[in-house]
Amino acid sequence: MKTDDLTGAIIRAALRVHSQLGPGLLESVYSSCLTHALRGSGCDVVTQVPVAIQFDGHRIAAGLRLDLLVNHRVIVEVKAVEHLVPLHAAQLLTYLRLSDLPVGLLLNFNVRHMRQGIKRVVNGFDADSDAT
View 1 (spheres, helix red, strand yellow):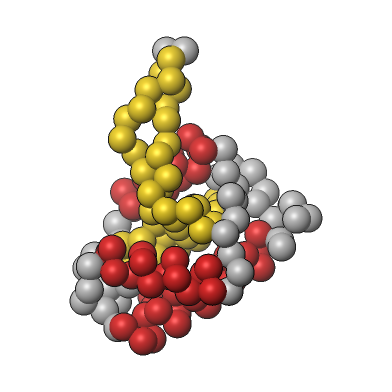
View 2 (tube, rainbow, N blue to C red):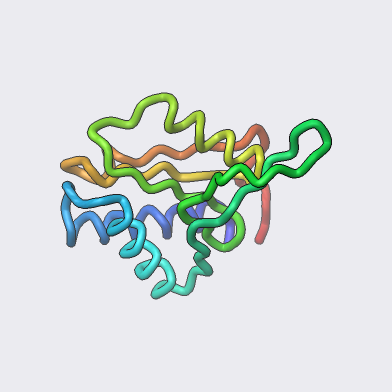
């Protein structure tokens, strides 16, 4: 599955979750429901994936965790905040760089219409050039 197809499937699942639950719940609720929806559609989803940091030639377990990793290729960060701020996207970009992954989705479920809460972040290379 191409990256665009995978991110499209993730966005469709997020729209479905938001449509059924609406805004106002905890991030953990949206994350659990999104995981369920994605697995139901055949995606491989790993939750709370630890991210180690390379610093001064040492691997440091810094306690960073990805909310969701879908098909070993797309990071999904789930939020339930009043507004996404630039720091949220910067955080996701840092996670992409540390993980050497191509693309991530920042999904804020605390919005009236889910399309207002979707931000796609791309790591400095062409995320759509893969053929898998």
